[in-house]
Length: 432
Ligand code: HSE
Image (cartoon, rainbow, N blue to C red; front, side, top):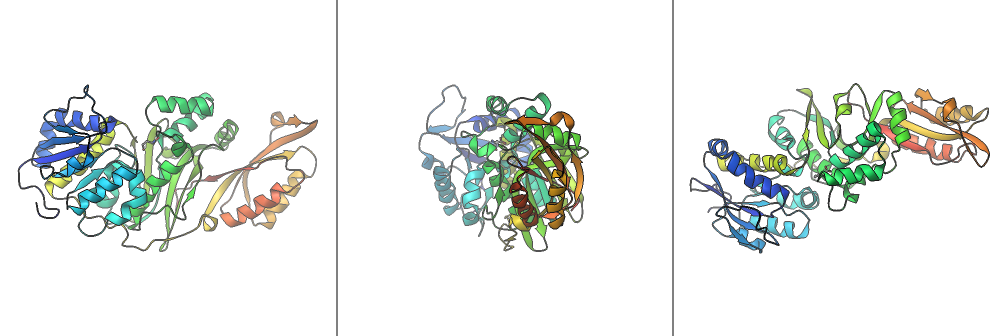
């Protein structure tokens, strides 16, 4: 077959790496939706090979030839390889080998793409990546095709279902962090090492890919600010509600002229914004662009059938000959460090309960040019530690540059009247 040409046979022959949940979902859909897939692709899609470390006799692989060696998928009888093994090293080798041979490859693997995608998005490589971010939500084709005539200015995404599940369970049922994580694991959403979820790494990998497609910049986690959800407490979730917000873990990518900020962290989201209602393991991405204003996509961010649906959309476009060459990296993509970004902030300041403390705090904020938008201090929240009364002073500030907020926080923390760690959570605004 000539480099990256489509198969001349009237069948698209695929070889699948992996036999896990997504591979099984793909095998199911290829049978269940065979008629529609054939009509859409213009030809049947047939699994001719499967390679996986271990066989799973309980899975019906039809007429496919099974092998434990991934290299078997590079055989001439495979038109397109589908990489569903996860992990970085073996996946990188398979993707590189396939592309070197001019064989299109489709992958659901955000980790390998976040590290190595820039090596592959040049020349004529056909690398299908729809399944790598937000499972069944067609966000990649929305960015690379649907919105390709727009200037995308920003996007905000709930792109880690595990974090979203934990935060909503803590918020709505008062579930502990540990119990909520266990429930998310039972639902099959959490990574093999759930630290990748709760520390924000999984969301960061996905945001790097979303930003690359939105702005045509290289895929990069350098200069990306990454914070997980371990610092969010049930108390913060309750105060946020009182102030008219929910707390969600989000990825934010924003254009600032020709510079770009990318960050993942917990955020307060206005309860009146639809994103604030996205609960449980669901994912959501809202995209702001100059022609359309903004659009919101919500749906399953993982799982066998939803992710297989994304794999199939790439395979069908490859069969049709319409899979677009991605423009990733054509814009240099200078990054804005988080210290130069602007937000409103939620602050929870544990302060001594005595006269003058509010004034001390207000004075530091005034000197930093930071205005208070809303504040709560409750009589029933007064607590005693070592015989001394203290109380959380909770506020939302107006928009300020992060470096000024950092400076104010270091002054606040050194006040004798501040009795512990100040919690700070950024507010995600959707108006710019
Ligand atoms: N671990 C991911 C999540 C699912 O919780 O969203 C796959 O990306």
